[in-house]
Image 1: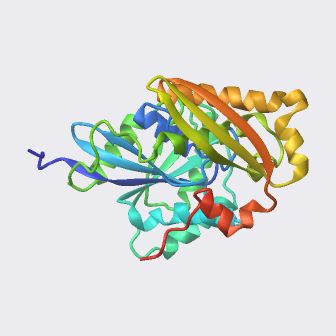
Image 2: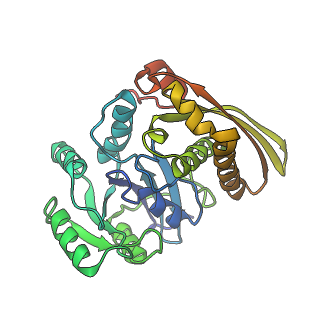
Image 3: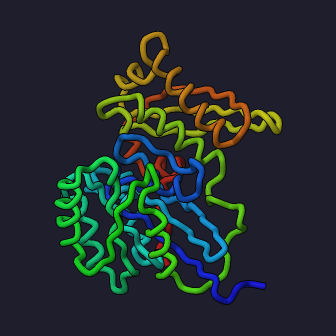
Length: 304
């Protein structure tokens, strides 16, 4: 019988690129389900992370960082994030205490002001382990001016500092409700979808300049060879022909490095041996090609 005091609901993780949203999600569900890298815009689509305890079930919605879009992919990413403003029961607006406020923070603030019924908001000041006390106090004061009445929590999404207090805040704000997912389920994505993100994150870690942000991953094959092994074939799509050589590297070394990193991450996720084959192909201006974006899974949801 369902506990009448059990709470459940949707909690959106919002903020500009590289605020630590995906790192927090991975910490909360105790597994790497969201790709992370030191580079902005690692997350390109919404992903659910499900935390179930004896008292509540929280469906966290990890979202792309809100930024000034310059192509259709960027527009899609912003829409993925901003739709959660009205879908969520609670908003966790995340900030990086080591970085000053910029226009991306203001873009999100402006959108929040337009929402007719804004959910409860908690301002989550992240990276307290990296910020100096003076820096943290200064940044906190800056960010609080965007929403003076909101509750504030200081955390480290990497180390876990402050997260128990944050979860208690979330529990207090959630409505009573049922378990939407089985207790064992921690995400809504399939292994093959997470594999795509992990391959791209590996490229983000090892490539420089504009190449990672002008690259997409197309999954060509995902075959279960046995309970203990899988074969994956994927193509890295780049925006310009000159980028192919950078991604492949001298003697194919860069592509091997990306593949090795990605394979390790996928094996940790799946718990089995992975045979990963990567290719590189030019797909000019793919970020502004609606048909190709749709095939890559960047599909705008129809308005209700």
